[in-house]
Image (cartoon, rainbow, N blue to C red):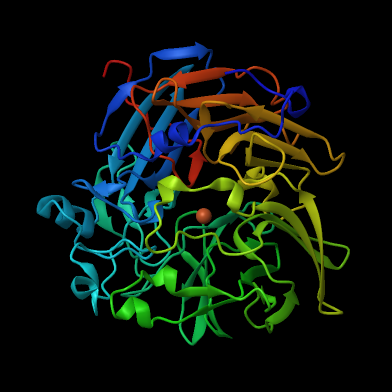
Length: 497
Ligand SMILES: [Fe+2]
């Protein structure tokens, strides 16, 4: 794979991929492995020390019964630990109660939120409203605990050295029975005395409850506060500043009847309402202050890149779609016709609390998802955003490239794995002692259809268009994942192992 510039393509509108190649990354990986990575192109930086944890669906089927949507897949956590120029790989499934039951039974026993049904038609699914905590969305190391997260339930704790599942974790009683902990915690490194992890939970209903948790570096609760907002709330991520938590309530209605009677999954009962505004709930972190609500034009948001306060305004950079991207009942996601879908694009929202108005500006029109900023810039003005992006500049397409956007200059850099590579979320790791915001390493897992395996690619984040510093070839593929985090603790075994 070579670094590729957009302008260098002679035919930028031609598809940069084949559907067959893309489909290869959506096959189950039932095998759990651990090994020193020994097939490496380039060189792992000596100063790179720590562990990259990643989570995502490891199974796209249960004993041959295909899931309706990848988001319904059981969580499989990967760890790549770096020390002194070497890297150690592990992957293990989160041993959730539902995963163990289904593996023992050899069939799907639980309906998935995104439309996976038990075999036997609607009669077999009607009135079965049990949820399987699939622990598949994010993994964080905080307060000495490695936690696999799924937004509708409590985390699972894993052993960071072995990835063995230790069980459900209620954060020393912070979470009460049945309470959730979302999959998008954010760490404010700047505005408190010590770094603070801020996360939330949504309890949806006719009116929905947003609960905010703030935890200190030991995992102790600093504060918790809850707020009721009218209507159904599908909120996957939030944005954080020193003074506010911001929640974009996508304009959607839920009619749960088809779910209850076994015809559809819960997420398939959501109707996007393009004629309605998106509501932005601005909740002060000082819980004694009142929350406010602003409105902006309709759109659907999974992820925010970052937010910050400047000149009496709040700025939020987010990936916004014109409507909710979903897989309809009867559709096969593996046959996705990408050109039919609207792309996710990066927008900047400018919130003026004094006038209660919102302006928005398109920052990047290229189809993109999974934005990432320097971790110390969380809640602060940022200059650079790294995002998974389509190779081609227009329309919807699979993520095959990493885009670096320089907000100050508008300059863009693109590293592309096209035509046969497909990227995951980029994770930026600052270089120790760095002073520049982009001085660090950009890592992403790439599914390479040519070898039918996955690689971890390490780029010099200062110049994405240089050839990768290192490309670590795994011995197998990793299904397309969701989110991951870097921790400076290195969880590699000793070299003798
Ligand atoms: Fe997410």
